[in-house]
Picture 1 (spheres, rainbow, N blue to C red):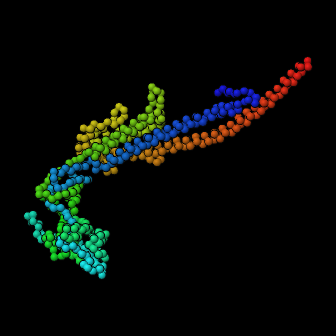
Picture 2 (tube, helix red, strand yellow):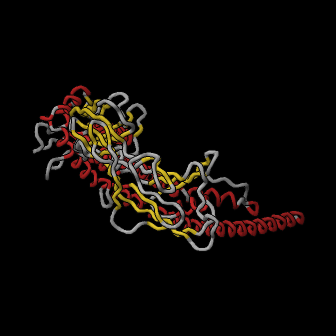
Picture 3 (cartoon, one colour):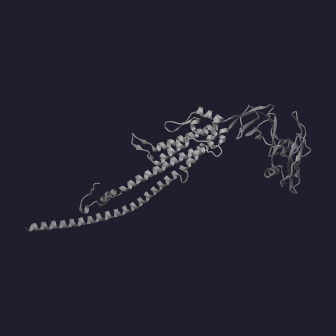
Length: 476
């Protein structure tokens, strides 16, 4: 770099001279900055690689569940009176189902003609309300008719409430706040305020009687609306009863689980005729998980290709072009996914079920071949992905293999630690170099200041001598 100055002597442009010299001295800082930017770019690139590999591992883990490959779905006839869902263990088949009876809670009410008064004119002592649960036996079920039955109290002590209020509203609130297994509300029918008490749970064994000295008593009866007590029945507690292929099944709730293995029936209404329930194989979940795995693998390949690419036309190299770690990951991932497995039946590699590599190194799915393989028990697709016994399937093979790259102490962790260390070292070098530059700048400033003084002194001497010589010439 050429130096320029405004003149000589005391007219030296010291600041400009020092500035230009320091620009030369600072050139190594630019090299440091470029090197640091390169390390930062690689750090970001390896972060992208780790993210894509983590997504691939998650997709592989989703294929470890063999139940995905043996799922079923339930189809229920129109207006069947129930819905159905399936879980592990359900097998394909058809059933005839009739909802003969829904599970219900017991519900009673106080008199419809006289408002219930829990105090009855007296506020002297706290009163008690006792709830005792038991079983309501309706009698013999014959030809669709139920004869009168009886209430059998359960074992144990009754649930007791001490009531200190004054009104029917106070009693309602006390019941709802207490741990009695029932809830209460009030209905004003225009003639009287009726207290309605309802059990919290359905089932024949959730019938309840009411006692105590609060002025309300009730013993369950099979006759609706008939009672010698201070309350009458609105609804009896009862079990659900459903007929499945001619077999009667009872449950205490309207959710009937495992009457058919792996199937849950949710009863919604009673019906007079049977309706169909059909269980069929459902490979939608498995197909979706496989497609997600293929996409995750292809996304990983795209990420690696973009980060390692070299554009011959523009002569521009991507961040990880030529990087040995990136090349190693590319080759090892392909080997993990495309390798053959043994001991898992007729399927040993993805190509056996219609998933092959294209010319770009990505996976391509032959949907018809894959769907056929999923339906073919001989293919053992579930075992191929999820494994069998002590033999790992493709899902675990890929997932475990990826740990070598993305886990703490893995290949990517080692590279990022090295890059971070290099960035840190450049930071320290920059600090030391800038400290040295400060000293250099001070030295240049001092040197040019001294030079300026010397030149100024010499100029003065020169001017003096010139004057003296001119004086001598005047005497000549």
